Amino acid sequence: MMNKLLLCVCVLGLMAGNAFSASGLTRKECVTRIESCEAILREFQADPATAIPASVLARATAIVITNQFKAGFIVGVKDGYGVLLLKKSDGQWSVPGLINAGEASVGFQVGGNAIETIYVFTDARTPRLLFSQRLNVGADAVAVAGPRAADAESTTEDFRKYPVLIYTKARGLFAGASVKTGFLSRDDAANRLLYETSYGTPEIVDSDWVAAPSEVKPLMDYVRSITR
Image (cartoon, rainbow, N blue to C red; front, side, top):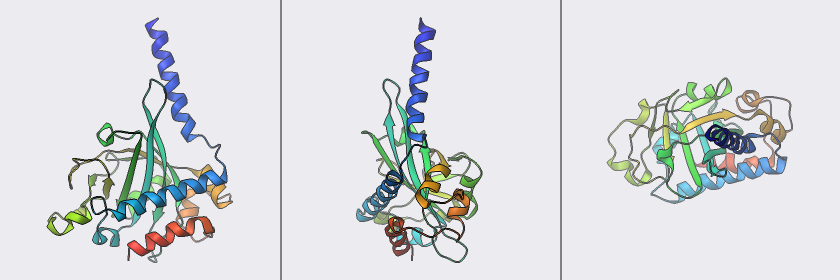
């Protein structure tokens, strides 16, 4: 009886996780995800308690914005989505690529159902791991909590040595503290739908082959404005 109960719990967990990673999105839903991530970034930057310092943004090689949430009945499965923007070799920012974000660390769970996180990458190699594998932040790449704008002047640590700086609304997360936030992975199906192309995520994000539709330009413009 106990084995059957455990099996049912596992099946429920898998069903809950798959519900968020399924490719049955509409293009409108893809656009909504882009707009949601733009709103998250704007909200972070509007509050000195969560804002990313201009000095950090100026040397960013990539930015990932994620919206993760708890789901499932009985089983607390955590899943979500996000967007990736790359700074290319010519200094221009890419179109945003939709990604999957899951298994957020319990340490990031502040309460409620949403976990909003900004990842600032400081090297060119690490964000491109998303193109060939699932990136486990904190395991595949060292990640620490980044300095806040409100504390930037008093921070003496050189954060350029860390490939990933994490910004979240979690309390008690001090700058420089090691962080594990689960995995990030590319979502080719969603990107092909959004950009109406047969290209995969690497070609969409890391090239000039795909034009930016009007729906993604507000996010691109805002990222350009805060990373100058």
